[in-house]
Image 1 (cartoon, rainbow, N blue to C red):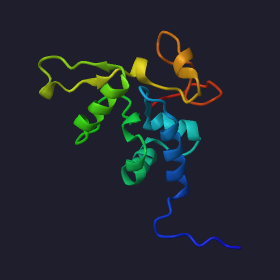
Image 2 (image 1 turned 30 degrees about the horizontal axis):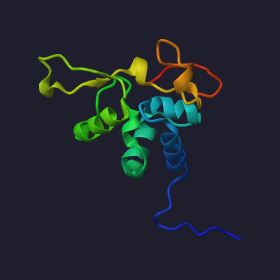
Image 3 (image 1 turned 180 degrees about the vertical axis):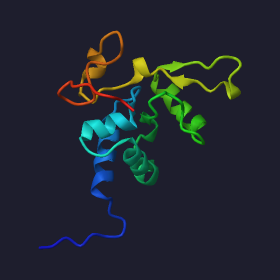
Image 4 (image 1 turned 90 degrees about the vertical axis):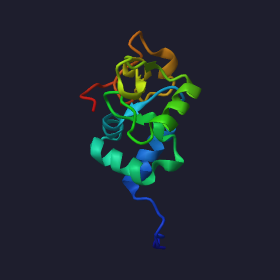
Length: 139
């Protein structure tokens, strides 16, 4: 029996990205590069594209830029989610335009290991983005 994909079917890569986004615990985040590394496929741009096109039904605010800046155009919505979930933030200096905080990536970043949020060390990470604890460059 052959499958007949519908026009609203997700591309396989996008489905995998969204699956990972749904795993990120409240109060934690993964970067676009972390997700690509966790999947072992694609890169930050591919993850960002999948999130931009298909990510509205998942906790999109938990997939972030590596520098902790909030997604332009969505800062206030994301900030409301971060505050509701007690996601670690770094307040912007008084001179910053609009005083929009950044994510405290050292404390908020999740490595993709279930249960690691509770077991994370002082730097907020229990290992790399993969279940094997491997590290690597994060984008």
